Image (cartoon, rainbow over all chains, first blue to last red):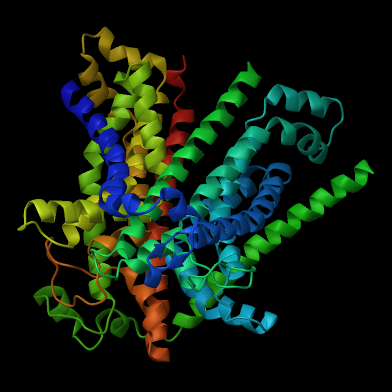
Length: 279
Length: 297
């Protein structure tokens, strides 16, 4: 039995590493065909065999950044209300609702936003088709909020109760305790919440695929269409297997894998500092 | 000035809650309004008589029954595949791993948690192609591949649930069985895991919900827009999330659009059910745990 348990852990670990090579090996002809830098920093023009994925990197970053700009204040606000005002049963109900909302499937957001939000954006701004960075950022911001709220509330609640009681004894109201004590004490926890939100936003496929328009050009503004790395993978799957164009999706997967790895390292660094400060 | 900042914070917080609640409320209201008046039987079974489809496997062409069946079966197979490795890896992390092994496996599980589902799908796809090149008879895109890739996607949830469940067990209970002569493995499987059985079940249900909503993985490994007949592990299949995505771009008239909304509500209810069940189980456990004072003595 012990051997079986060790084997299971090995399998989990090896599969995770194997995913990395599953991006590297099939994409190798493309990686060795041009310079990696040209692929990462170049534009996309298959007719002159340019397979740079810079527009997709920019698109992913812009949409995920926009989602954070929408989602972070929203989640912070809801977390503040939960921490300051909600007590007992009301707090349990509020948090249960938030948790349930984190279970709303991505395609459902995409579907409803496609029918209602896209025409709304189109009619409001009188430019473009409504399929834009703005549209997908708004929806994606809402999508990552429930997860971020739970993490924020956990971080704010994790502040040493002795310090909180001390502040209360000195006459601090709940609002003052939050503003002057919990916010600064829980900063690392809040930060890791934001980083996790960023991870979810970068990794999402269907919101941007359905709402961002998937134009291959470099986006010039928030009302313009863009294509993300994830959407690129989904779109190019329909093309011929052996072309270099097809292999560019492995490069996208490769970049996404490295990005995830980087985020995990950042999260650990934040956690580590947090723990050291507490000692 | 400070008073002003505090007031501003309060106003901002309530505004945020208002916007948040309003967005979700409008999402649900829109869905409810759009499916009102939709005939449930024809939504699920189209023109095929429901009993024939259910009992005799008659193909359904205009309904979401094949998609629902596809989602349920692929998710079931996926979670069945993932439970054992997931729970065992969790046990390994909580009870067996030395410091270095713990660090490495922990890091890898974290990376796996963060991997975008489309990357997992792409890895599954390229593994499929690789196998196909090595053994030309290997199956192409089909439900088995989707289930394996989906199982891999939800693996970290199972690992983490098991790990935290085992870590939260009080020392008194942990030492009892070994004191009576039980081995480490016996202690884990006959005392510690059963003690947290509801937590584990909650984790499994949560993983099921995550698997049911995912679209990217199955899109790259075997889902198709139309597979009206009975399902087999080695055939391509329909699934609810992909049906919704397909309808969003391919609908031809309002009736088909309404089917898209119907499918959305069905998927939402399915996932909501899983999530609610998981949280009920887990909160019930923590409640019971707080109540059991005999352990703290």
